[in-house]
Image (tube, rainbow, N blue to C red; front, side):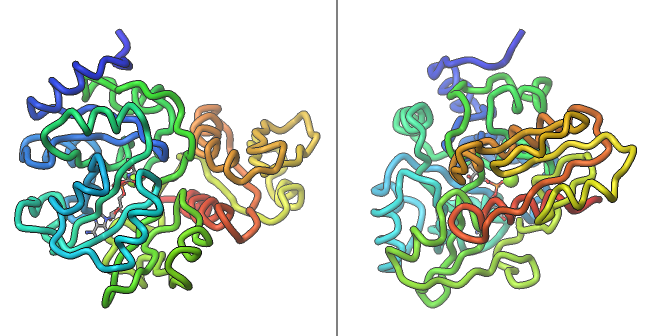
Length: 319
Ligand code: TXA
Ligand code: MG
């Protein structure tokens, strides 16, 4: 029997009894548990096989609930919250004493966001506690953007994927930390850099692990398919390096018009938003076809293209 269901009451009951539920958000599906249940939080880490040093994002129902989680909201953090929540932005702020160390990997900061999905907002409003939720994939694999992706990963581990359809943004939230009350990008994501800069001015990026000891989750290999993946400016040139191989290609908008290839075009109309929303589903699909290689086309280095390139770059690392 499928574990995918729209039953919010069932989700409330499971979450209130220290169990996990996969929840829809506009970015990716999350593997959620009560932040105050040690049992639930431990099972998030064990189900994902995620190391304990990698802290979790706390999901809250409204901007107003931020005061229950953190001790200090810098002026620019308040501006950003008002501008983008509910939405695909996570902020890392000083935590209060109620937030368990297990959530934050012992750090004095906590990552928090208000997701923009009607089903999960309704769930969060009905629960008396916030939800910790990392992306609902085993550590290091591709994040899920459809309920079926989560079911494939965790059907033997959890009792419910709360069905909210396909994620409309399709890549993880943009993470913003604060140093001396000034915002810094820790992870590029579904909210474009330019949109953030329109609210708080020029902002720097510390998106690589070496530069960002504060974002321990930024491992070089992440979001990765098990098929060897390449990211290139020109797919047709790269194909020549893989003759006699079964090749999957992932162009942005233009078909290669070559019937010997398995091709998924991310956005025929050239929309980066559409491309982002389809990216992980395309990688899931290509990864299940027993191909020898996947060749992806690099996006223009602006707007969501920057975030898509970041994810594709991480997908190219092999273990
Ligand atoms: O879109 C998203 O953000 C999704 C949905 C479910 O909300 N969640 C998600 O969670 O992508 P996860 O666990 O896969 O990624 C969270 C990232 C990790 O890289 C983690 O290291 C970082 O957030 N993080 C969490 N708490 C942090 C903290 N206190 N300081 C710095 N980085 C933190
Ligand atoms: Mg993740």
